[in-house]
Image (cartoon, rainbow, N blue to C red; front, side, top):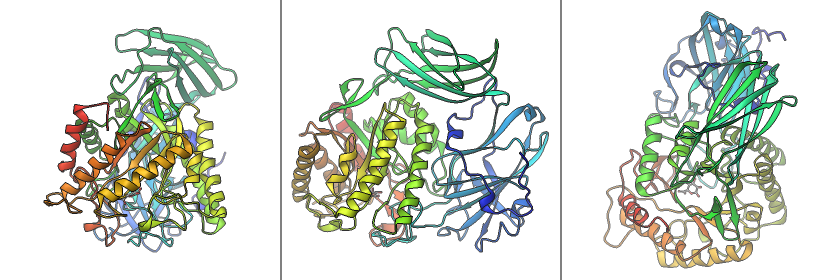
Length: 618
Ligand code: GCB
């Protein structure tokens, strides 16, 4: 293969990132190296989009410092609402000893589209934020020397993107997103260089488990190695293992753990799993991860973990913090899980996009259950067919990337393929919980789109449940494609504002109707009310902390009367920044039970009392 010359670089010349290349997380071990190149990068906005023509990848002039991970919007003066092209550049030394290895560049998340150059050579591009991508840069790297990494990021809001913007949005907000969170742009997670053995290496490991202690590992590799071994080690030191041979580049290995210790929220037992690759008698590569042995299923109205009913108590959340924007902030992620634990929550949804990998690792260790959601929020099915088709392509890519990345985490129990796809004739503020039928064409499009994604998720991973999250006032028929019904409801807030009695009556009626239609368990993936921290009111007025408490209490009390309710996730864990709109005070969604800087509102204390006292109820 010859290098594409940097002489005239058009985007079309760039290879598109291959989802499979993110299957194994970069790790430092006997055979692999990792060099984290996050930190302070050189940055320049490219308002006129001239950077490629002017060859900014040959060296960024007039740049200024920016932190990675971090959104540009609140780090750089005057760029809060800027969503166009920007350039990031960083020099890094690559050791001479890496010459014998394959060198990869992995970007944890770049929102929204990224193009990457190494030493001025184009290496590839990727569409979509919140998921990683990686390229083999062995040919572009200079060993034993400084190297220049350049990444152009662009974050325009468009109807053929996911999530989408600049459409006839119901939100009437600025910037014009079709979703309720700020469209931050930039390099949002770590950027790392890492090596994998050149001659032969592991490329994927897929682990599935059964209650009798059978663990099945599908191991994939490239290169000359013919066999390997796997081992699973419990914290008491007991280890089981097995050697295996490949048929082609794949091997399926079954290991039986005697007296298996199952994984659950109460006992998040993990087995340290090591896969080794052998060329003859020599080990040439290794990969380690944690395995939790557990199963997930539904049985009529019940969600079962390890064959026993479980109720999900928890939250929807956002990655985000002042100044960092959507840039991943490890202490905030740690704190969020600490605070969730303190409330007595056992689960959360990664609304509205997959989170940083470290969150899943922590959830595995702490025993949280996760509804893992891909970044498909704000979808609809009534504009031009070419937009719908393009969005489907992006969603297919997201699904593949999300499952490829997160499939080995015991904490992940449900794949959510979309949040609140909307419907043209949606009831909106007048919606009273009655069944919406929708029109035929739109129903057909939606069921094909969403049903197709659910089916694909089940095909890629038959061991978990798949669903999408339904919007208030959307046609009930769409929900039929799901293993488990997930709905967001705001009676008492957007509809029947302030009238909790009326709200609960509508909710009760609608839940019974859904149960009657499908006889599947229901998770209320969102419900909640804005509360301005410090605002109090004797009669529970909207926006007061009292109102938020009453709202959440009324919903939870109703849920406790219905066996088929399998989960209650409050919207939201913490206040978060969104676009400007007349219903968003200071450009924030204030439905958090914690403030944006993670101070508890009354509702957080109420949940702590409620959920830590009786862990069997909502
Ligand atoms: C929803 C959306 C969520 C919003 C929330 C709200 O249904 O799924 O993204 O933030 O409502 O507060 O309006």
